[in-house]
Length: 200
Image (cartoon, rainbow, N blue to C red; front, side, top):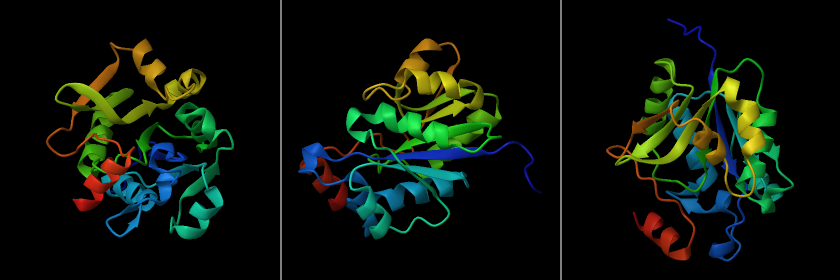
């Protein structure tokens, strides 16, 4: 039976330039035989998000030419070097009207799984307007933001903070969804990280 609730979209932030990886754009890093951005999109779709927006920045033309992202809304963030906050703002501004919420996924968290995404969507269906994956009780990614918080999320997204200011402003509303049994929160920032993830 068709679900008539407003949809939850996914917003994949994939603009990073990989400064600690010798300037290799994170979206194009190889993971399990495909670019990391393709993996991230596959994860959010498998977890239940049909509408996917991807924010590009570093080497965006190479990313567009070198990846297969059918059906995704591709947004360019010319201010990507100022930090993740600008990518979150650009992505939120590009979302279609009528959404119930957005799930924010970072391209450099390959250990996030469809099961983690699905748990956050389930928390939203149960009433959560702000939710984050938890790992042994510590907040991590992805993060889910209800539509009524979009403007505040964009206003507070500066530097590399992303949604941190929004979540800090509403501690009583934030639902921490434990995902430590199905996902790994570590990001991919250094050559050692890349070696560890690609070896796995």
